[in-house]
Length: 192
Image (cartoon, rainbow, N blue to C red; front, top):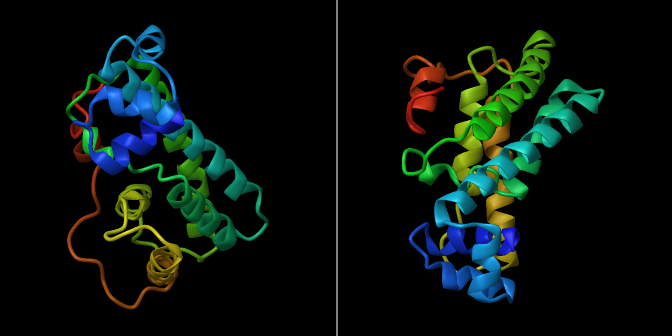
């Protein structure tokens, strides 16, 4: 049911009717509403799951002996399961305590991954955790046009180009200041 909801919301938009989720999951509306009383509750759960998966991807990256390989594994994994696809709901749903707690765990794991890549000189020094989060958001969106192997190949090619742009030393100075945590969290609403 959750996979169906993620698919419907990220391909049809967050205004998609709950009936489309029930249809995709092959369940009745009653079954859906017994598990999640509201669409907002369902979206909140999906956000927690996406962040939990990001923590797992960061931990898998940290287990890699090569800091760059671990960072690239993390980014590719998050793009693969479209962890940033729910970002457009920022500011439209209430952020639960569970969402904030999970976000903090995610930030900590990703921070360790980025720090390790910085310390070894693998990641350009002006790239932050939030730069990675926003990049993942962009690549988590559905690719324009009909789904197919060619679209997936193009997406993977563009991701490889983007990853190369993250590598140290980085020849083009990045414009402006990096995004702040306050700016990022303000998209979701005030923190607890």
